[in-house]
Length: 158
Image (cartoon, rainbow, N blue to C red; front, side, top):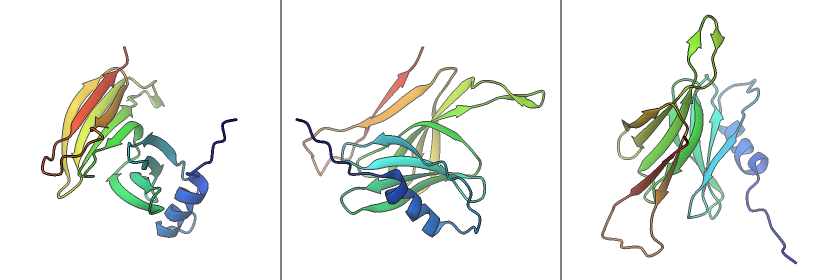
């Protein structure tokens, strides 16, 4: 018989850490959302920040620590996200709503960004399309420590 043991619990591993760090008495609903599980076992997730921001973090199951990776200054709908092995680049796919006549229309655009999170915050637009895009960094099992390169896969829905 197959027996599965959970190694990640959103409530225990993420929400308690966020509540300890956020600086607001009435935090309300955090809406944590798992975005991806990286090859090293790390879980990349997003949540609504204290001031209407959207934040992306990573949970490391080996050290059981949470790390803030990036903060968007406004509320964003992150549909896909991946972190490279060196944790210097973050690929993010955002679903954007267009506002018209006082009501939100259905999601019509997807913006894919490559964000340099270390050493400086530098953002490049990779793709802006009318369909959802899945992003995933790829790296081989065997490591060549002298070569620092990242390969990014973009898959678009049609």
